[in-house]
Image (cartoon, rainbow, N blue to C red):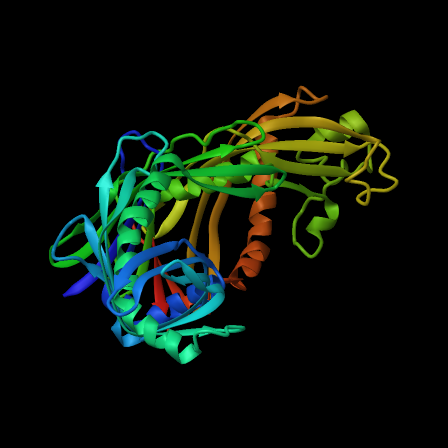
Length: 497
């Protein structure tokens, strides 16, 4: 059976149409689990484990034994990769099972041991758990709490089998270490039973409480602002069985500028296919709404702010220059108002109007709104070296510009993304302010479109060099294949053997 973990990330929408989907093939997951789990194991080495074992037991010929184990820290974890799995559980839709076989774990803890009320041990110790078999079943239950993750994980079943637990300590006079280990062999079944009980009675409720009272939030800095991404499951994770078996996750993601309080608007999207390339280990399927979200962040954060001057046009065959003389025949307004030989800056920056992008026939197309300032240096003695601190500059003309865009993305190589811009064209322009109120709109549009058309070859030349994929090499990731479809883009992950 081709078992797939299928994750659907649903961006905030009233009609709950998924905007982002991911499919993780379980068969391939089990083949590359070392790539995924080894870095995680490295991160949790030395981690504090929430275990607090208290055992009171009467043992024949020994009497009452009191054992307390707390302040537990993980020192080392070794897994048998061939016997480590994450799978659906007993054909249930709301449960998965994690299985580990023949694992070896070393933990450090503070231990108190007493016989008949007499303290025999009260020190730091090391436990070596050998040939540990562990099974854990997690069930996902629905919840209505507004502050919750959107579901409640419950640990429904725990099974632990331990061949031997070795007990190592320093500075112990009585009893001898060998005797302690013999005693530990007697106590091991009771320690295992107590651990299982603690997981079910303490760890599971604590996890459930956390899921009900702590929203999933991620904060990220973009430009000068901090943005918060709030994630909520619209329904519990669910295993769906059929020709392929997968787990379905659906999420709402709300984006807010923490500093200004601006919230990302809702964009339209269409339905997306569950899978495009079923032979991929991991496949991400995104719609145009993802691009709209990214453009909103780019503009709201003011990261889109570009100024060009006459030096930007060097080595470009263009019949104009960014001076009042160079633009006299096309746009005489600047020459007539400010005189000859004055330098001109063109500044483009973001406008908070909603953008709308679409993915059609393998291309990304749509429109976006930007602002343009034509800035004239009335002295120009330091042009173009004073654009960041130009006291003699005036904003002659400001316009709201609607751009039409069309581009495609593709793989340059297994490690590189590349893009090709097919079209950038001004389709509408509307003056909003500026010293000059009689500038001919049509002339401005024609000039700017000629300028953009002349810049496109050099832009595409740079884009064709490719952008290095920073994720290649992590978690066994070999490359990412891009497929542009209708209303979606598929990112298929290829893993090392």
